[in-house]
Image (tube, rainbow, N blue to C red; front, side):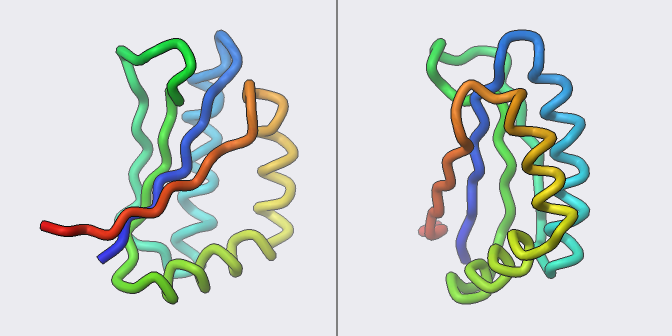
Length: 101
């Protein structure tokens, strides 16, 4: 099992807007077969830490890679990305973890 984390460092005052927009991303990911998506928002973090995280589970790394390809090829994702980018202090980062236990 793998967990993909897409982390977002938002501009001041834009966290709620990004959180709302991630609900659209969740729908796009689900259409591509993504499972167990979650949107996490921090309340206490270091100043340079991401304040919103989008996660999804995948049974295999190959499955996750295929889902990412499907999502990024979608015109709706490209429109979504253009809408969200101005709300961020930097580009989102992806981390992929293998579930150990």
